[in-house]
Amino acid sequence: MTESSSALNPKEQPRIIIDCDPGVDDAMAIITAARWADLVGITSVAGNVPLEHTTANACRIRDLLGLDIEVHAGAERPLTGAQEFATEVHGETGLGNLVLPEPTRGPDSKDAVSWLLETTKHEEGLHLVPIGPLTNIALALRADPSMISRVASITLMGGAALGIGNVTAAAEFNVYADPEAADEVFRSGAPLTMLGLNLTHQVRMGSVHGRECATYGTPVGDAMAELLEFYSVFHLAEEETEDGPVHDPCAVLAVTHPHLFRFSARPVYVEVEAIHTRGMTVVDERGPRAEGPLNCNVAYGAESETLVDLVMQAVREA
Ligand code: BDR
Ligand code: CA
Image 1 (cartoon, rainbow, N blue to C red):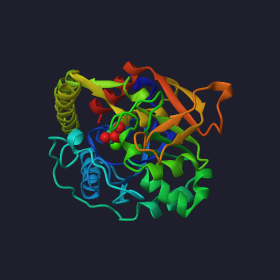
Image 2 (cartoon, protein in one colour):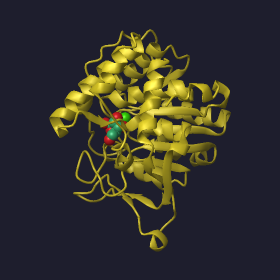
Image 3 (spheres, rainbow, N blue to C red):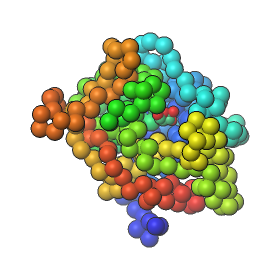
């Protein structure tokens, strides 16, 4: 499928801020957003790799895509507790084997939280799309809880329904890396949408897509091919599959193409206390018997092939 003919013009595209920790799939999400969203800016957070790398990578991807937007560096560590990285999935510097030129321009500030607050005051109705640990978002909500009424949504990649985990049996990386921050965000009353592992495991890309990207003969096509190759090697070794879930682009596409997803409102809690389930998102699936507020739209299903096509189209047209 191609959406070129029906592509929204920039003014009609949802205006989003990406809060990220690039990150192989974060890079894919930014590429996707550059095509399908009106990207207002990027904030970085420590997560897959230390902040120094996630911020530099965000600036490198800005250059790669020729984006005229600001990048603001955020939190260097979680609110409390030990720091977790995911270098085994993303490589030591965060983009696998992809080596992009040094950024032509560094971050526009080291105060992502102030920028988030100012930007959402200046313009109401923005979508926040966090695709890393939720530290920056929690700090912004602590500083100004009223931000929840100014944003159209907080549409995040993190957690999972149905008890799926990746870092541990019960926890997904972005929530596990800062459970206290996630807990504050999920209890904030913000209009939340969660793209968890139960959804992202349905949206997969691998070396077949990488080889196609390499045929585009463009810098973005070459970069995507390299990212997918690294990803495929990891998934082949870990799970004996040729492809892997492209987590973070799902959050972008849930904002730009919500009709391709199936959501249900659920009470969702973050486990912060337990030993075996710390960082788990507990989703109450009991329907009418569920307790607590329906604080989150949880994604359960998606037209996966169309989503992959949209990511590929974003690469092709970059
Ligand atoms: C999430 O964790 C990170 O490693 C990925 O970038 C994604 O945001 C998946 O659990
Ligand atoms: Ca990420």
